[in-house]
Length: 212
Image 1 (tube, helix red, strand yellow):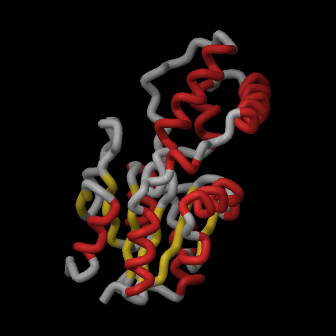
Image 2 (tube, helix red, strand yellow; image 1 turned 120 degrees about the vertical axis):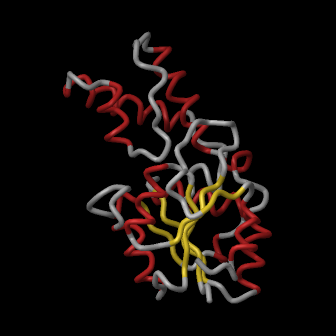
């Protein structure tokens, strides 16, 4: 019996991945910096992203990363527009059924808290953890292992909801069943390793009694 669900945030609870991509492209365009626009950063972390954009110049890479942090602060995420409208009713239903709710995101804690506030679910989430609080990033399972421990869950009574190949791998590496939310904008994301792909968030309700 499922007793809890651990959700990724970006691309799952909020349509942020598309926003991140657009914001990053705007910054690079303003800098007139030429890079491979086909690179896929869905589910990646800040350090890995900038090392991929600026692979051969660590000094410039660090400089651009710091400058982008300032740009990002000046162009914050409009979570009130990005949060999936299904989040609050879904979380309310999960709590009504007595399930625990966790969030395991590569984003910073301040971003997770801002998203929860915008969604109106702060009091419904039992535990959240940021990748910044872990020693390793997804696809390492650390973030999911810590979340399960804090929530008192295990691989038999919990599952994860992810979207990126990196996040799916992290959940699988932790021994969890993982459902992948279909990309909202038709992005080409390899979700083939997931237990199954769901079309919308509320579809997780149909998976609570599913036995694999």
